[in-house]
Image 1 (cartoon, each protein chain N blue to C red):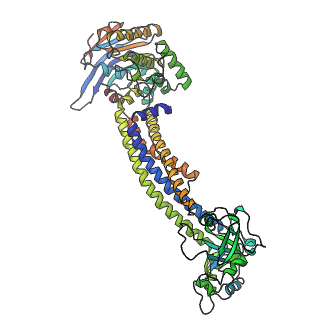
Image 2 (spheres, helix red, strand yellow):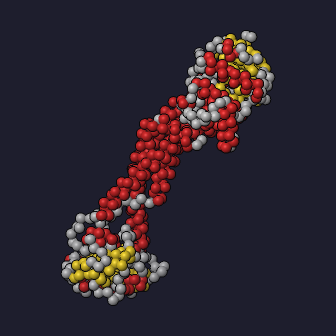
Length: 221
Length: 387
């Protein structure tokens, strides 16, 4: 991942214009475990949205897996999100009408993976994460830790090059949060996937190999 | 996306889904019931058309004039000389009773056809039970299904006509024509009934050969021209079969337009409820849309998912409306059939398929706008709803 002079301005030209990212540059090697930290409003979420192909840079460049996110078409961004990037959100954000297995299968289906293959992959991943007995439980039937493990399985089902996690332990108690962080360590170590975790929790960033600290849209450390 | 999650989504908003589906169901119920009425009308028109053998029918006017114009026997002799006429066959058609027998449908009539009528064209409908009349029958009769129901008659029953007893030997197959309520007797017997208690206009015809003439025309003859010539030169009321068919079809088309228009209004109201429900669903699920996009859904995936939901609501409402319509139709038809009245509605396979397809298409169209707005949602805007 290569970010060069990345600028993101929200509501440009309007009275509420906000310069969320202000000419930041950094490179993240494949397989790295990086934490992006900063206070609320520092630009963490804007950075995650740009790196995740959900939002476009206002200026500068961001390359993920060789794709320039600024000039990529909508279809290329969709393909990138479906196949090369996995998201883990703070509030788990599983689809409530789907059971654990269906939630994990969803990105695979969006990526065009055949139904049987998607089901098999999802089943295997959930079993690996200790949820083999909870395949057909709906999110509201699972604990917070279990939901976050389903969310992690969902992020991994397409074996993405990059996993983006936004405050992955934000809604978990300390013990469950530690279990989830152990899982991230394992994913990074065993699968070699690049892990970018947005957080303001020291318990999280202390585990990362590298910390990018943001303040007012700029890298300060 | 499989149907399971869609149904679960809809079940999680059971009241709203039910009310929306009920709106569609009412529209489809209206469509099925009025459509059933239209289908019955089409059946009746088709039945009448099946009786249209291409021959011209000429009836005596209510009163013949002093010159003898309107006299059937004399007119028949004249018509036989017209170019393009192959033959003229008299028929006896008499009212079964002068009063209203209290039933809804065509009036009960007495028919008598000479053997020649059969030689030219099939004017008598098929027999469902028993047998048809034979040339050597004297006091035998075949009766229509409604005639049988109203009078509790069947094969072996005796029907009295102007003091003469007729033995029922067959029951006519239902054809949704005037024969459903008719009694057909041998021509000679029907002819003998003339001069007894029959309408005044018949009594005034001294050498009457029947009450109507079937004028069989040669292939290629202009039936319109012939009918006008018969009317002008004999004083009979002659009808061109092509004009009759065209008039029937035009009347049917107008009726179809009116009733389907009314049903459409009901359905459009239902469609607006789908637009409303799906718009609310998109608003409520904005965050879910953002998540779906973040994990790889394209605009097309989101569009399809919301459209499937809209169509599922339409399908549920459509199915419920069809079932409700079928129950209403079955109830009314059963009541009518039991009293010998016309079965008002026809629930045909094409009506069921058409109504269901209409519900699906309408709900898809109604779901398009909210589904498009869902598909075009900016994922970052949608994800901001997360916090």
